[in-house]
Length: 295
Image 1: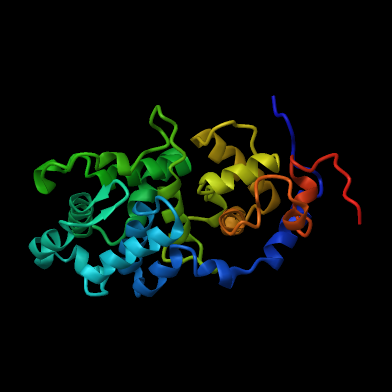
Image 2: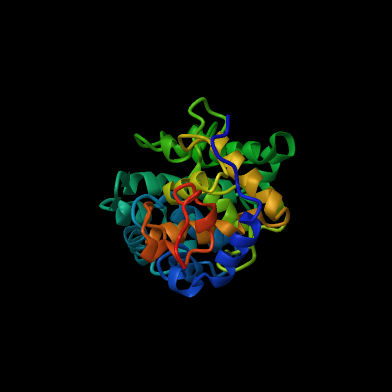
């Protein structure tokens, strides 16, 4: 049973939070700031987006640094990474790359997968639509995961490096992964509004799911958008549906704001009137409900 529910005023308070948010400040701290300069066309947008989403582990400074290092190895042109002419040189340049537990041989295999896929398809949107036509958004992510894993293509691609498949979980697997990174990639591709890229045109924004990282989950739970005690695909669906009731056309537009409210320290995750006092959604937060604050 849900332990707390959104207040009736939450939609207005979220709009106030969105309207007052310092997008330019947070844009510089977000991985998308490193991706946008690389996304000079639709193909490069997908390659840069998949690279950024795959590396989106850890703090944003380290993520942006990792994206920049791979881009530098490609001479600043991520299209180079999926050009079959450069496969041997790419493998050599990526050999020493490390970001958290992600290795250069794994990234090389990813670009090998993408090179193989692009030989017969214009865009990864085709794979997502193929899966979503029968299985909804989760089916689209499952199909996208399958393509990126290179499922059924081992004859063309060779054996995947250790740990590679785990980089691309599916929401349909028993683990019930929230699939934050793939969901983030799809958000970047679909939404045309700042700060996203909007290269995909056939997936409605209203069908998007929120990329549920730790910051968004914590805030969503304390606003009553989910009662789930852990991040999972079920929690993703709950939070997304709650936001869809507030904005049916573009429910995940709040994702960037909620995420960076946590990253920036604007949400201290404890009662601190000096920080929480001006927050638009403080009256809705579980930590503050029922507590009167002197004017």
